[in-house]
Image (tube, rainbow, N blue to C red; front, side, top):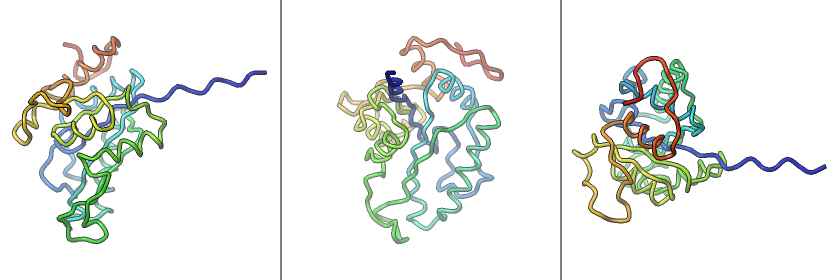
Amino acid sequence: MSENPASPPARAVFLDRDGTLIHDPGYLGDPDGVQVFPGVADALGALSQAGFLLVVVTNQSGIARGRYTVERYEEVAARLGAVLAASGVDLAATYYCPYHPDGTVEPFAREHEDRKPNEGMWHRAAADLGIDLARSYSLGDGERDVVAGKRAGTTCVLLAGGRDKWPLPVGGPYDPDFVARDVREAVLWILEREALPLPDRPGEALST
């Protein structure tokens, strides 16, 4: 009897956290400060229903700089997960980079392959979760998110909210494939690009 064929590689959307999914007050180390942007839960739910794994990839240099501890970061991450889960959205995984070369806390005060714009977190997720990076997407509000996603081989969306912090596209190899106003518009673009239907969800309408 023949063996069952191997499952096809998973597809994912890699998500920046601060300034993309939640309000970024700067070095967030308090779980009570987690404020998910309006429409994010519905948008992520649509991606999940379409078959994408949701993977958070976030730089957390505040750990290296001594602004908060790994334990406090984990409390914030758990709070975000709980808020999204209450809306029916499950994150497949969360990866974070606590390193920064200007840090003061050992052993995190150094450069690291995971720190965006490096793509280390993408490759770790691909290995852990069996993700096909070439058929996946990256979404974030900063140039470093786009560069890391491009280096990993994903299709990238830049949120327009990052324009006050990062250069606009200039026609180079690390330009985003699309610039969206917010997560909702980014998800609409992904679903339309994939010719996937927009699922019905309660709450804020995702469709235009």
